[in-house]
Length: 273
Length: 55
Image (cartoon, rainbow over all chains, first blue to last red; front, side, top):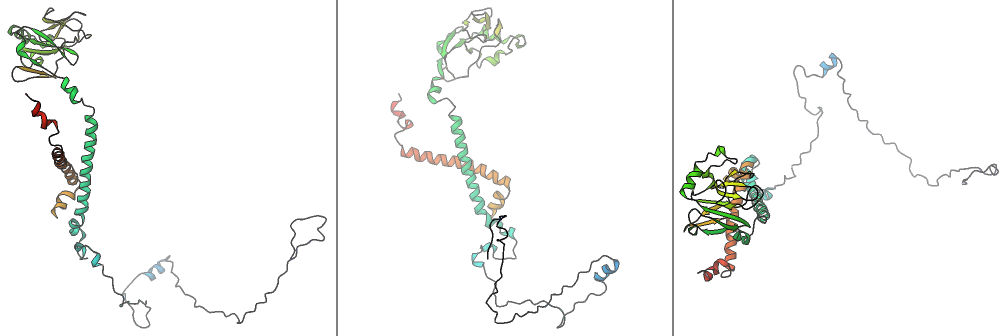
């Protein structure tokens, strides 16, 4: 066999493609046999297009079942020798009876799994709560700061009609022992007439003791005690007048003097902060 | 079992069980661990030696 890889005009007359078939030397020992197979005849499905064909496919009249030797039948081998496997050993005792409804055995099957899940949730809740509270309490003031943040004052040292100044959290703290005349005067003031309306009973826990922070609510100066037109405090910076309940009565300050958290202890002691 | 029917079957009661369980667990677990810590560190903590410094 010769085959040309390229075509050349000059060589074309001398080159040509040829092919040759060689007869196989192998001979078959037997003649080929045609095996006849049964043609599978499939009944044609009638196309129910007309009333007649529709009628012919319907079950009408008496329906009968044909059986017998000549009747078409299906061979179903009954494997009576094969035993149905018994999985009872692998089953839970509550599901051994197949006729029992599943929901009747629900409790015994699911209690453990649910209890396990619940305990996991409980541990998770506990852990999450601890993580959150750890971060939140880290923002709170520490114990040494809290210890410095409150002062105790012996009220027995403050005579009636006197205002004493203490230092509390870097700010001046006024403690005023009011006399009966001052109490009566401040109680009689109508809150509606005030710039920052507060009745005297809102300003004090015990009428004879007024505890306020001595920072003017205008620009933060320290007012002077027992001065001003209202007999309470007077701010020298811009002339704000506070009365004996620490309320702003005249001048530029917008609010009453601030009241810190405090409580009265036994033995005539006062705890501020 | 009544435990399953009463506590676990409904999601609402399940969640309630978890919440109550977490509360009970926290109290008991914290109390237990605090007791163990105090027992190991007996005599070393401020509350144990406070009486020596008080007038």
